[in-house]
Length: 118
Image 1 (cartoon, helix red, strand yellow):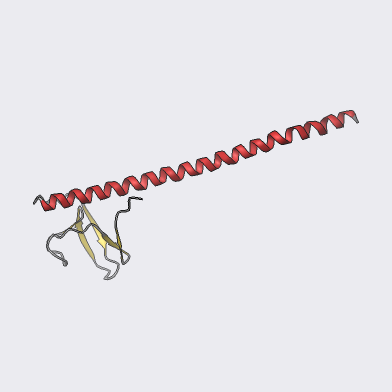
Image 2 (image 1 turned 135 degrees about the vertical axis):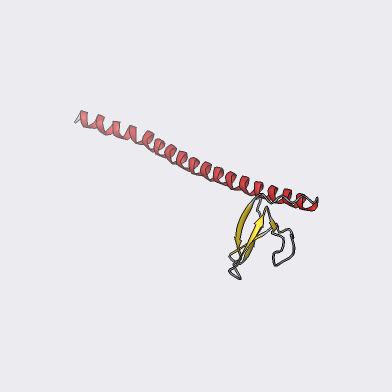
């Protein structure tokens, strides 16, 4: 009988520290999840800032008369289903909406996409 009382008291004594350990584990998991979200946000924000800076640089180059067409990507127009060539945010000369006009926004799935900084 005495031994069972010690065992019961020992289990009761261990219950509180085990609960604390579980709470600490939950806090650690939550903190890691928040850290992952922050790192993801930082990567997205850095990419958007870099894109925006490149668009501003291209606009300055265009306005100063330097036409640097080193970067090429295809943009698909969501309304017409057509595509157009874009060089560093500049329309290829001879495109349908003006010769070499600057477009800081890209059309995707029928909506304009501007760089977001937050």
